[in-house]
Length: 387
Picture: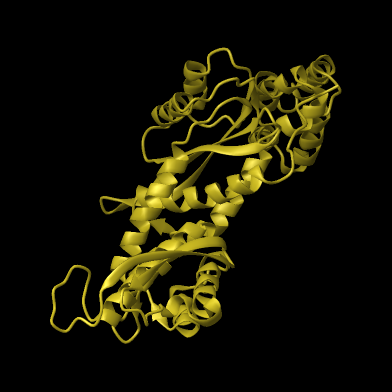
């Protein structure tokens, strides 16, 4: 962190800062403020660390830990000490106003999605500081370590596994390509949800999915009883190879959407959607299959392609009938991952095009890490003891 009279921050670095997702991690606040305090100490002593100088005004004397409740949560800072005393960093001066204001400014950047120009104005007005390229780089490196550790943590028993994919624009070799964002979530045996994994890649769909699923297994995932997902490209082969014999529930919500591509007339769409909902809302699989047969007969003459599609695809949404009735509503779709995907989109749309895969992975990992922590301390998603 460099004070405004020392440096003018180029626009692209604030844009980079905007993409980091810092508000999701008190750890990032700790990194930035700690770095600022070290720079302040060097200026106070008129010498950099380990620098020999006749103009030195003091000597570094380690750090003192101080835990502070900030707007981003509880953060433990490393306050630089000077052997001769008399030094206290401005970032933690009276009432910690500067630190709290800085935290609030960072939060506004990401939560509100403000423009780069406004970010610069907010940060300077509230904190009297600007952020240097070197500071952002160092903070990003340390944040990457935190996120990498989280992404590679051990897993354990997961009863229900949800998979989803979304796409973000990423620049590569001068062109813009769609990078697939693979997300795995699950319901643990205690009934709580957790984000299990994330992967960003421009590679072929099946190769990406297979490597991603194999990575979950290598991290100790076991006990899966059901996989819930849409019919994403490449997932079928990868799923069968890695989770051989595990039942698959195709998302009913996406099936209803997919059916619209086979409806010959716009005026039929509401009727078709209602018929499909009737099938999926059946009390058991036998009744659902009976309803399906009737719908196939109904549309055989007036929408033959739809009838053929329904006969082949809708049964992939019936797997849920084999599971406890108390769980079925939560297992029918991957909609909660869709809502999560919308939250990611809200935070990434300001970026538009990521400079590389690593930048994309960093921001989305930070968002998902925060979500997973909220789930861990939140309500049960499912009661696993069923009657």
